[in-house]
Structures are given as structure tokens and as C-alpha cells.
Length: 236
Image (tube, rainbow, N blue to C red):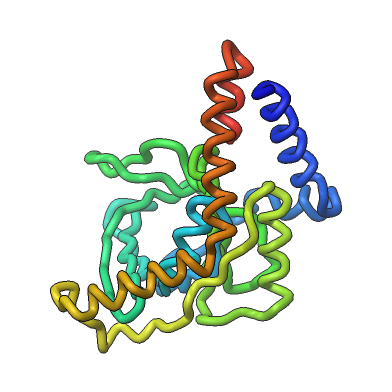
């Protein structure tokens, strides 16, 4: 029974990738030919990902933007990530190494490390689209603008469909980081927890879907063996 479900899930996954026009997918899933200038501010407009990450973004509904500055070491950049969620703000800094159309983490020697994110084609002139590795399966749309056109968003949604990812989630566009609540504010923390609980209730159907997909996936891993089992792990 489980083998049948796993095969069915795999077939459905492959068929969902083939739904959009093949020529559109062939173009949109190609890496960019020329590396973009990363320096400056980029707003995270939308994401598409696995069901679990989709649920997290729906519940938390953050606004995120990234300040990118070049380092003295060639092709190494500082990424200052600013996140705002229901009035609470947080910052995170990481370094990335750019090699043509790839973005790598940086090791202690300022050299590329790990599996890269790919920069994919986009018709949006001031946007970049990054595709995470096969484990995370995270597609992100960045723009120099806080909002983009419906046509530009539609193109990103098509890219997500080509990859068989979940419905695109547009993030919050509030990027005012001048008036942030303190992380130590107990009332703000309690209010955030209530909001999260309400959003979980509102997204009950999605929660059940995520649990079901996660359970099915884990079952498939147990059933899979040898090369096919490894294939399912790598391609999930």
C-alpha cells in the first residue's frame, strides 16, 4: 500500500511540474547568463517552497529586506537581513560568495562552501530570483521595489509551478524599521502568540495538508531502498 502511495505521489509531483507550457518552464528555470550587481537593498516580495515553509510564512507573515555590501575580498558580500513580524524586528548578518549565477555560503577562508543557490531567469528588470538546493526547495523573489506588477508576480508563480512547489506566498510590504517593538516586551510577545494561534486556526486545512505530506514523505523514505531510496531523498 505504501509503495503504491509513494509511486502515486511521485507521479503527481512530476505531472505538476509539467502542467505549465514546457517552453515557458525551459526558459524560466535557466540560470541567468550575466551575474547581476548585488550591492544595495533588495526587498523579499514572495516565496514558494515546501508545504511546511509555506505554512510558516502564512502564519508569521513577515516583511524582509536585505542590505548587500561588497567586501574587500572579491565576490564576497555581506548580507544584512532585516525581518519585521507583527511589529517585532530582528537582524541577521551572513556572508555570501557570488560566482556568476551561483551564490554560496562562505567558509572561514572567505571561499565558497556548500551547495549554491541558483539565480534564475526573470523578466523583471530590477528583480532577482534565487532557487535553493534540492533539500530546502526554496524559491525567492527579490526586487529593488517594495511592490511589483501583477505580471511580474505571475511569472514568478509560473516558475514555482514549473518546480512543483506550493502556491506562492506574498510577504508583508511594511519595511518601516524605525518603530519596532522590543523583543523583551511581554505584552508584545503575548500578542504575537495570540496572532500566531489565530493564523494557525485560519490555516487549519493547510496544516493538515502539511502533516499528511510530511507523513507520506517519511513513509516513502522508509520504503525506498538502494539507489531509488537515495533518489527520493535527493529529489524531495
